[in-house]
Image (spheres, rainbow, N blue to C red):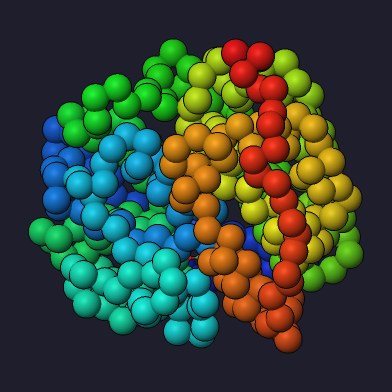
Length: 315
Ligand SMILES: N[C@@H](CCC(=O)N[C@@H](CS)C(=O)NCC(=O)O)C(=O)O
């Protein structure tokens, strides 16, 4: 079993946020050579609608038409010291596969000595009764490349072979400075670590703003895995990262191209309709008690996602 003991995400000696390494890292393969064959009805995806890493998997599952192939449960957005839980509530689902009350049960059945965080997204295997992976970058890539036989007719190729080097390169930059950058700013425990993260984040947003002035999508004139990974961070930006994580040099709406780009994606099937601001805001403001001890959830910001954009002219 490809799991190892680990320590939770925490802060370095210099006060910087350090993301834990992913520890359950098996892969699903079309030919079954990994021991986990891509088979309809075998796997179950656990997600939170609040979580940007899980949001990627939600979008890809729907874009590729895998809803009937890979089943899914949505955890309650409020996480306490027991971790993610299955409760009744708007937009949440119970766990129909195992009847778990807490996501920790899936981790501990997989590896009774597991000491890491019980994170979403993760993928459960009904046959071996264990988690296959909680390594979020692999989940979307395996949906895109290993489940091809089950994609809906006309499904987009989100990870085309010819574009993979460029997609991988831009994903690495965006992960470091933007996707994880907002967490590094938000969870820094001293001024220097915060400033380093926030400056790198906004330098990268400035760079993306320029790139997206000339092209509709991040790579190759078509929607790819790179856009799927950037969208969940951008769509949350003004609602949670700007205030709660102190990423406030600028708002996203102050960047005409980035704001147009994210509205363009939001208006497409399976981007806006997988975005749940109620779960997003309640999760961030009510779960990170150190950052927001009152757990009061702000009312704003008011954002007009339907504002017209001219992005089609760039195609
Ligand atoms: N597995 C990764 C990435 C996924 C992730 O961070 N998921 C968050 C939600 S956005 C989570 O489930 N955290 C659970 C926890 O910290 O207890 C990690 O834990 O760093």
